[in-house]
Length: 287
Image 1 (cartoon, rainbow, N blue to C red):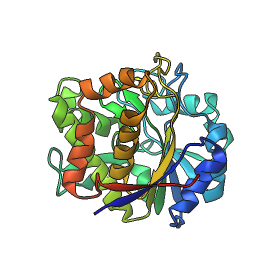
Image 2 (image 1 turned 45 degrees about the vertical axis):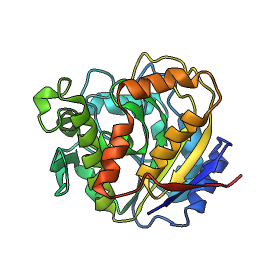
Image 3 (image 1 turned 90 degrees about the vertical axis):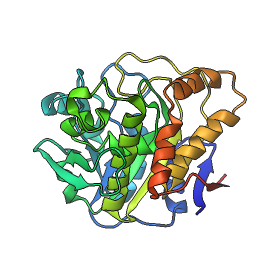
Image 4 (image 1 turned 180 degrees about the vertical axis):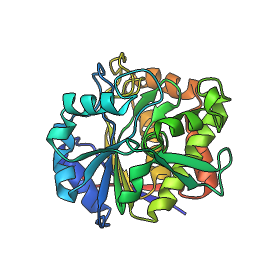
């Protein structure tokens, strides 16, 4: 089935709010807002001032989980320090969801992994707003909504489990496509967990080939494109990829080389095969 993806060329806090309203599905209860806190040293992550209005609107709690690699977010203490340094604690409540451990979500339909180890505090939330910065990624090719709800919501141990396609010890050595398929499996479990009460907004700005998890990242080579929203993370990420391909900006080739060399589209393909969304979509401008 075809999904609807809303689009605006204007990247602004107000337009982010407009995209949320366009989805026509006010989120209920205790709302988690999943975003990327940004590795210390990274220059490209989206700053708190940009997201503050939409977080205020929904009354949400910013949620993150610890990383599985060296840096300033790999322990709870270091992650809290980064949250404060980057200003997230100044704009909203913050919850590092695996601070007190993890819980397991089953993935009966999983192609590579059948369990997703996520931050324990995920259970506190009735719904989720996923605010993703669309950009490249050293391993995944690109990072968007699917990566944000798979690797992003996994506990530190769970991140290693996904990267290793079910074998934590193979975090950096697992078969690459199996890693991408494991991300799709994990994303599927999050979508099913929230049972319709999860919305997605991707912002296509500062599109470096590197992720916000990189302390040393390349500057973007291509111009900003806009922002998009959907109830379907698969359609949303596919639409973002299509907009990069359709861009006349010569800098797009550098980003596409990163995406294609890592077979980034395969995460979208694997997610669509699981049936929790569609690569087919209708793009609706709100401009």
